[in-house]
Length: 162
Image 1 (tube, rainbow, N blue to C red):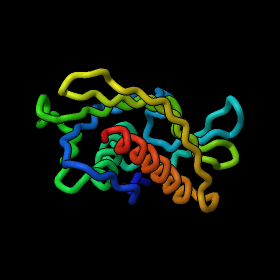
Image 2 (cartoon, one colour):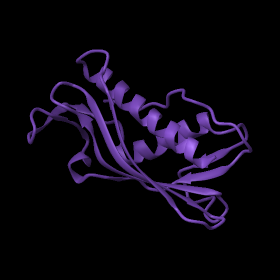
Image 3 (cartoon, one colour):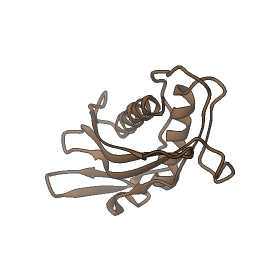
């Protein structure tokens, strides 16, 4: 079983913020306990013994929140719960249309991310495509590369919160 992990990233300056990461929407083909891989342009594969430690959408939500806490100014609070509902300065909404390895092992993350500010103003939406080659062909290396691209996405999001 495998899990995504938070990774160090680029810290942003400024005043502390409160933020929440809303429930993450993932493509339905990823919504399974097995780690999905691509074996061709249109062919997907799963190995019954290569599994996630928790549902992927929940894990992405939790690790994205952890990544944001590592990047935002000291004193910032990021949550995945609704306990701060109405009090958070920013809500992060994420929809993953792609988050898996290509046939050659390259990890591809394709997402739409929206930052909604409670103080009004327009929501800011970004479309991201981030790729990363894993260190080797093992599943552990692919999962680490998936953690790395999620960390890079958190860098972009944290930068957009300034």
